[in-house]
View 1 (cartoon, one colour):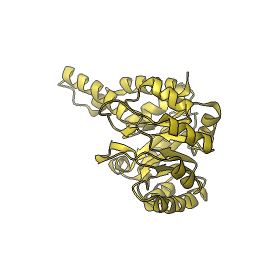
View 2 (cartoon, helix red, strand yellow):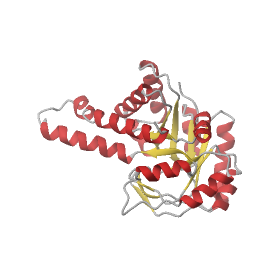
View 3 (cartoon, helix red, strand yellow):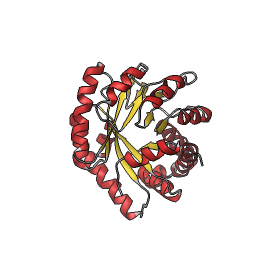
Length: 279
């Protein structure tokens, strides 16, 4: 069943592990992720960007697809359907009204005071309906949904301020990037630990692709309880499909072409689950 992220992330904080957010792009991706997490008996957050929502037809279509798969596949683990990087109150409201169980309001491009105003508006609307809210402070750079931006690390003071809005989780920008890294990741673990020591809410790491396992483990030790994965799944799927097409040029059935990336994605989801949950 669909749930919000509150209980799963609070348990992760209490027991020092991280819940993965796997971003979905279509039915095949959603089915693959749900089946593997259900097989491993682990909760999962399905992240959906604004671009992916538009690609799949709209928020109501996404909710209908996810609910249908949960029912038809007999998924028994907790599943959270989360808006990733919602850019406005209006977008958060639209997805909440459609049936999303969690939203991220990303107003990090604005000055802190405006970020807090917009975030509080989303929190008030969401909490009245049992929906959890994630916010961002600082700015996570890199590329997502064909939008490229620079990084601006969060400070402890800004994190303490935005937490006053009543958010359920916080994504502080601390050196990770969306997409692929140019060079080596450089996470600010010292500030990460300080934020965790001073806040009671779970922390979120965006841009999990390309971060070495030892840095992931260290981030979890420093208070990260949710880690977002998107690009890494896309690459695994792409490489497998590319190999299939090269070897099967006469195959044109889209189910076979798209589905040829399934095993690679199953492997990647299992790998990330084991790492994040400490299995």
